[in-house]
Image (tube, rainbow, N blue to C red; front, side):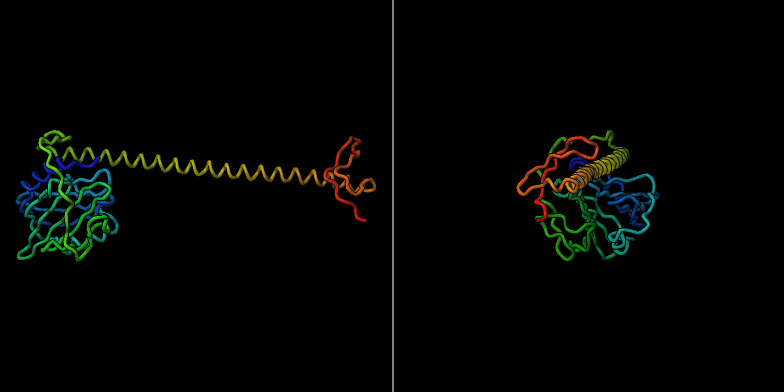
Amino acid sequence: MSLTAGEIGVVTEILTNELKGGRVQKVISPDREDRVVLALRTPGHNHLLQLVLAAQVTRLARIPAKPPAAPSPHPFVMLLRDRLIGMELLAVTQLNGDRVVLLDFRRQDRRGALALELTSRHANLFWLDGDRIIGGSWYPNRSFKRKLVPGEPYLPPAGRPFEPGVKVRFGRYERLEEAIERHYVKREAALVREGEVAYAERLANRAVRQLRRLTTKLDRDLASAERGELLAQQGQLLKANLYQAKKGLTELAVTDFSGQPATINPVFSPIE
């Protein structure tokens, strides 16, 4: 289960208090898929804010160490490096009480924002220019109701009813991000194991199907070979007893080459 709307609200409050005024120094494309890390600097502190879009583990939270970088940056990371580096974080806001977060940035007279939709299977990340026009996204449009493509105004999802008394699964407020990351690191490892098991099961099932097809083919080939051998034997007997074959017979009783009674069936009309 990804972060709930209530948990996202608590995280955004923490991030606004601690990252407001921070300046983006780097945009990192980690070697793990479906995520980006923003390196920000506030007076006396460095922060690594990770945004994760992977289904079932979508989240945002700071992480303690820089992750290994991907061999090739994600194309959207390249866009952010061009637009975002050097900008100051103004606010981290939850939109409409939903699982959507807006990170507002400014550099001199230029504005921009990241719209982070943490909606699990439909999660996405958008760069918005100063007038909230979509400049790019991590994935192509995943919405059936909104036109979320470059050049169009960004429209957040419809709001959700506010739920008072939100329960947070991750313990103490001041250690919330740390607890979130511990939880989801374990969850991602479990998902990897589940994927490996599912892959092994698919391979095993495929091998079983192939063996069954091969067994069926061999059974057919064996039956065909046995019938061929029988027909060859009957052909030899028919040649040896051709004088007994009469037109209209459906079978012919003969003695085989070992002296045992045998029946040739069917009997073809002899050449006249």
